[in-house]
Image 1 (spheres, rainbow, N blue to C red):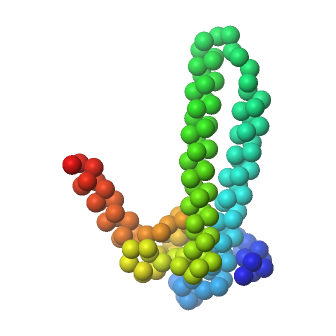
Image 2 (cartoon, one colour):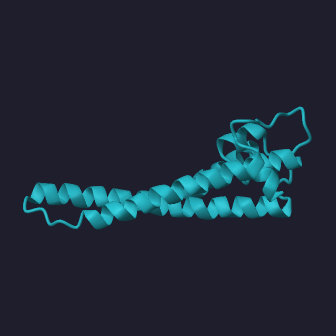
Image 3 (tube, rainbow, N blue to C red):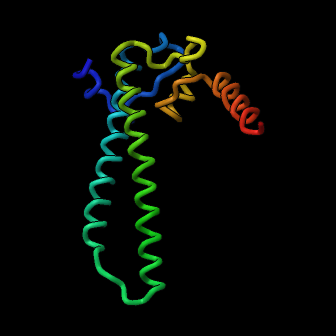
Length: 142
């Protein structure tokens, strides 16, 4: 499957409802998409580390220093979100390997290709996600 995953670029193929759900070709497509996404995040992270190391200067002006610290904090929060996203991508890749990718964790039904295309790390169908969010809202209001 690895050779197939590297042979299929996301631009060359789009999964369709006309083919068997989570066929080898669809799995390879989503695997390539997830790996490309992960590589992009890791490249951006390396750039952040370089920028943070380069910006060790101490600004004499308080406003400049506050602005710099604010920018640094925002960048670090963004990287933390991306770190969490990488673990979701890794989990999705594990699901591809074990054959459970593309199926709702709650119902076992296939997750729509459109949802997987938009959010390749999705673990719930749209309906199950909506139920989950409604439950969260109800419990949050308590």
